[in-house]
Structure formats: structure tokens, C-alpha cells
Image (cartoon, rainbow, N blue to C red):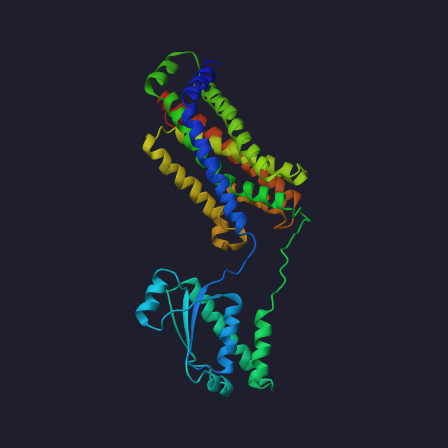
Length: 387
């Protein structure tokens, strides 16, 4: 176990740097979870809206009152420069002018040229308000076409647009919907990005130090076979993997709680298998001895690419069929599939869960085998084909 002991000594000498990376990524991990948790449920955001009512009729005032129900009405000087300044400095999100003759056109069913607006180009507020105004005018016209007079049609349209729809989130497996369970599952969802980044940035310096020429040449002169050498490197990395994985796991349960039920036990197993894959991937990349400056580049390409393709940052239900077809060849896709079944976003299927866990373990095994072959080729000077 000489290589293993040497590996642990090198790891100990670089433990300060490793702890810094772990703390940094743990903070990023918690921040990402908190940000996603705050957007779990939809909430309408009040916008700062200024309304200039040039028509000044009961119909136009009714529209002003409806806009004020869900937005913050602000006062501005009716001057182009003042309006542009307010929009630029975000004191106002949308400035609406109800043109003179609005009530007459509305009663006649004429929906053209009723409003004039100022807003930032392609902003969400412009899209929302434009859609709201179109929906309001269309609803009023629909009630008037049904035989109601303008005042009654306006009251009915206001009542319809102010009505809030009740939304129930689908839960296929009767999964626990408590806050602690939801929060810990969000925490698990971001693990692929963080764990790959953490392992590559902490393990690569150790592995590159072990791969220096003087150490490699001394190893080649000894009686240690390349395969045994790599196996001891993997063993040392696995010890480090377990420590980092337990730190992330403990932090999640301390912060967000959650009883260790069957679903969470499966999530823990799922996270361990993916973490093992991340460690094997790190050893494989380090086997090519990339420059230290390239490690971070490779880390970002792998972690971000896999996260965007496989549903870590954007839910798989929102990804296109083409993206998902490519993602199926990556382990993070199967990791997220298991997480979605645990949280109840899709039906729990035992065969799919076993397939997903097997694929994750298979990817880790393939990385380990490729690592042995690559290191043997580099240390013996033979090509992969010869091996």
C-alpha cells in the first residue's frame, strides 16, 4: 500500500486548498438551493405602472382601477424625457396612455389604437401588460357581444380577470410534500454540478502531483505494476470521495431536515453512485496530466454541459426531445430521472430506477477501466491498441 500511503500524504499536504474549494462549493450549493426554493411557487410580482388617462370616462377609470389592483401605480410628469428617465432608472416598468375616445371605441367594438405605451424593449413587463390589455379588451367585447351593456360588461370582465385559479402540483407517487422533503430534494437536484466541480478542483492537484515525472519514473523502477498503482490511486480517491460526499450530505440534512424514509434513502444511494462516477471521471481526466490552467476549463465544460443537458438547471419536462435524446447517454440524466420519481414529478417505476442506478454504476466502472488503460499506456509507453 505504498502508493496509497503516498497518495494520502500528498492529499494531506494539499488539504488546506481542498477545504477552501469544498467550503466555496458548499456555499454555492446552498445558495443555488435557496434561490430555486424561492421560485418553487408562482407569485405575481407587482410592477411600477404609470397611467395617463386622457379619456377620463367611467370606462377608462374602471381600467385604471383594475390595473391598480395588481400593480403599484406611480405618478410621473407627462413628459417624454421624464418618462424615458423613469424607465431607464427602473422607477417605472410600464407607462400607459389611455387615448381620448377609448370609451366610444370600446362600446363600438373597435379594439384598435386604444392605448399608447412606453417600456423597455422586450421586457417581461411589456409582454405581461400588453397581454393583459388585450385580454381585458377581448373579454369586455365578448360580454358585450353576449348582450350586456358596457358598464355590466366591464364589471364582469373585471371579476373574471381578478379571479385566481387554484393550481395543484401533480404528485404521481404520493410523495411527501412537506417543506423539509421538498427542500432536501431541491438540494439533491443540484448535486451533479457541484460534486463534479468540487472533485475536479480538489482531486486534480493531488493526482497531478502524483503524476510528476520523478514520482512516475521512480514508480516504474519499482516492482509495482501499473494496474496495482492505479487501483491504489482509486482507493485513495474513494476515501476522499466518501469524506466530501458525507460533508455535502450532512450539510443538506442539517439545513433542510427530512426523515430518512424510503424515498430519501434511495436519494442518498443515488447521490453516492453519481459521486463515485464523478470521482472516477476526475481520475480519468487527471490521467492525461492536463496543465493546471486547463483543469478549471475542463471542469466548467463537463459540469455545466452535463447540468444544462440533463435537467439539473432546467427541469427535464421543459427540455426538448432532441436534448433529452442526447442526455440519455450521460449519467446525470439518469440521476435526475431517479430524483424526479422520488419527489413525485413522474411515476415511480422500479425497473426504471434499477436501470438508472445500474447505468450510473456502469459509467463509473467504465471510467475506472479507461483510467487503468490510459495510465498503463502512459507509464509503459505503449499505445492503447497494444494494451
